[in-house]
Length: 297
Image (tube, rainbow, N blue to C red; front, side):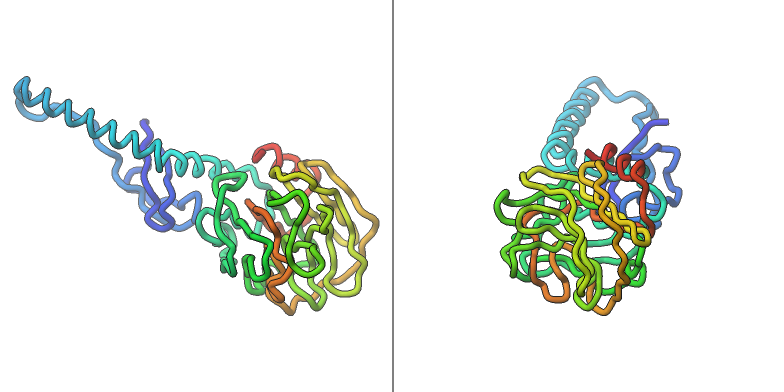
């Protein structure tokens, strides 16, 4: 069967599929909404008597001109979108346990669990590691707030994201100069952040001593992950594991959860870009983290 392309009526993203799916219901691979695949364009066929030579020549010229215009539009504004969709369809490699995924493709929606975010301050969208990502300017109020969904109120979990610093000397203009990448707020919540020197750290936003991991000192995209299972915490940078000493704590959830800043205080906004921000309801293995990094890099 041949393939054709159409746009999802729910999220507006481009989808490429086989003509055999025409007039059938599927789930959009991006927004997960049920949609009906439109009829594939019909191939030209001979119906009735052949047109005169001049008519056929004119028709062919018009078809060629229209095809050139369509191709130009695809190259200028559409090909990027379809390429992006193909990359995002490749998320089938993500392991089980994924409860939320924020990709930053023009919105702060959670394409997996429905924990949609709200952009605040000067947060915007820009070039990410895959398609678009979330861009923050490091100023107070710039981030994404998620509310306090039950699916993110866990003791054992994995947080993953592509991280790109906007400066190799500053990570935030907020108090203390440190940045929050993903956290559940003060009063005993968890915090995955970055120190002013570029070192990634994990903390209980209470009295527990933070655990420090690897450092990011340049302005390239890097894949950052953190897994917690009981008292075992492991950082990952570009697929390489960095275990930390035993870390025993219990998180409490009384504040808004968010990423790119501390969503309850709106302080410590990250200066840079986050993309493919994901949350799993279990600690992924080193092999699974490496597979995500390898597939997306």
